[in-house]
Image 1 (tube, rainbow, N blue to C red):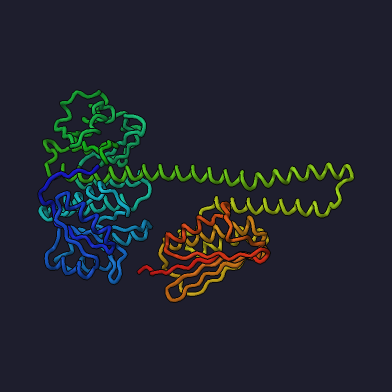
Image 2: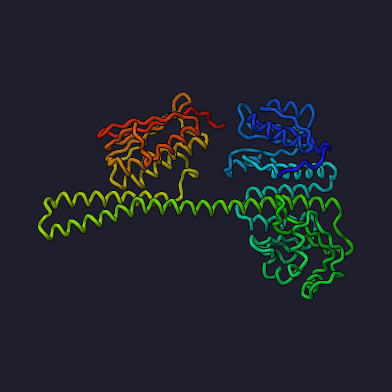
Length: 518
């Protein structure tokens, strides 16, 4: 639960978002936590507000009518009076290209919608701290540049170990320390493990070296639960294991700053910086900066763990779904094939099989259907090209890999301008098309399928039509995925119609108004 810390004004923030409900939610959250908030729903007004009274930070949505967030950011950065104001992008888009462009035009961070209140507050605090240090300490411009680099690495680097390696090296250079490392706590144990670090002279620190040296400090795991950093000013005088003392003497380490990595009240590990200059320790501004970096690292670690948990849950769910599909479709068809062939073999031996040709034809139909189901499952196991290459190519791949290999005459007809469609509309239309194609493949006994996609006057229409046996569209068909298609159509504000007649095929049509992305 988020708790208000103080009633004092912590900073002046301008929020720019055309989503009124999201704008109110974020404005109220920040106001409750001591920030002075100004808000607007368009970029032009935001530029005038900044010119009239520059804020401490701007929170900027990307996709807005008229002037988008990238254009607003570019104008702010082009103006000497506003170019140093930190800009934090918010967006529902999670593609890497959006994040990269956000940093390219001058953003300091990127938060995905829907966001967690704790994360927003932490990131705002982080970037306000950075901004104030930049204004107050001109000599630390290099520090702030490195801090920005850390934030960028956290946001854009997919693999957490690689990001932490870069961050540890950056921190070592930033603070001029001899040694930096991050030690993570295990998910099901209090022990520290999964260490990543950097030592100024030898480079990356291996896990085995760290385990035999600094991690022998039994006090370190207890520091994970502390809310503040711990500063050890004279390492040589501490009662430490012999191998740790030897390592400290060899590197001439004098002081050590230990910052806990905590997110949402949960200790995730520690960040350690060690200096080797005689008599020099960490001042208060350095401690605050390290704590800010530690907060960002903790958020990145938690996000990585949540992403991995979600990925594993999705994999498990997909495995269970495919297992059910395999049992309900292919296994049942093969069982039917085996049962029928066994019965007809017995009848043939007894001379009671009246029409062998018809029996073999029916076996062939069952085998062909099983083959179609298997090809469909194999296609679903392959990575989809929807995200990488787009809606049209994904549909074409589906028709080539499944329908045409099942000897169905499959055609894809595209008309109009289908570039820059909103991702959500692309996703839902593709899934609706998949449902309709699956129905035709499994139930329609179709010889031809025609998929048409047309865009005209801001309306996109998708139709999937087959020449199969048809069905009574007014009756309930729980196994045809009709409910799923209807729900997906409603999500994008479209209209769904299904026309089918016995022996005259089926046509599924979806129409939806679109507002193309800028």
